[in-house]
Amino acid sequence: DVVMTQSPLSLPVTLGQPASISCRSSESLVYSDGNTYLNWFQQRPGQSPRRLIYKVSNRDSGVPDRFSGSGSGTDFTLKITRVEAEDVGVYYCMQGTHWPPYTFGQGTKLEIK
Amino acid sequence: QVQLVESGGGLVKPGGSLRLSCAASGFTFSDYYMSWIRQAPGKGLEWVSYISSSSSYANYADSVKGRFTISRDNAKNSLDLQMNSLRAEDTAVYYCVRGTREPSTWGQGTLVTVSS
Image (cartoon, rainbow over all chains, first blue to last red):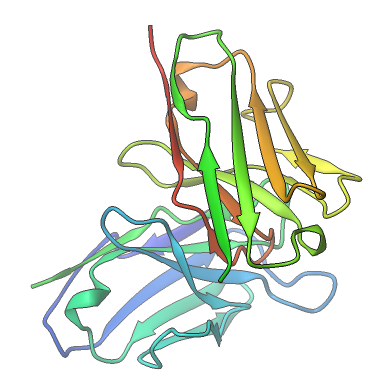
């Protein structure tokens, strides 16, 4: 299985400050069609996961532009320019390139300091 | 709007069976691959299975292969997961999800508890 390793696993952030989450894969996530299937999800407390970013850097409709994704190959990053209270939750990266199976990172818990 | 509603979860004894269902609405169901993803209590996310748009093929995680069967009915906009020989480690919230490589929409989940 492709292992997705996130860091940090816990991220206390002051309101209005930036935040960054790293995600590294054990293999390159470039698929044979040339795309890199790396997604980011947000799971707020008590809710289902919600996709924020797909194909490394494409933001989903309705996702605030303070969220951005970047990276290539095996190293990826999710950045939040200014953390707001509604951003509290667990963030997961997920690779959709290699099956079986598609795999998720362990999750990064973002909390307000 | 796109909506996925799971049902069928509950308490089952080890070795028992359960069938989960997902009702889809707000999009052309037959155009999309569909998946089941689960989350054990307080844990991370684990892919379970996916099925192609026309049911021509399906894939399973090694942890459920031979025990779980995914199916769909495009006429009824529904997705199912038949779970047999259930184990304690199958205890989780099971999410119905639209898509595979870029899972876009998730249901609210249904809790399956395997315990004697």
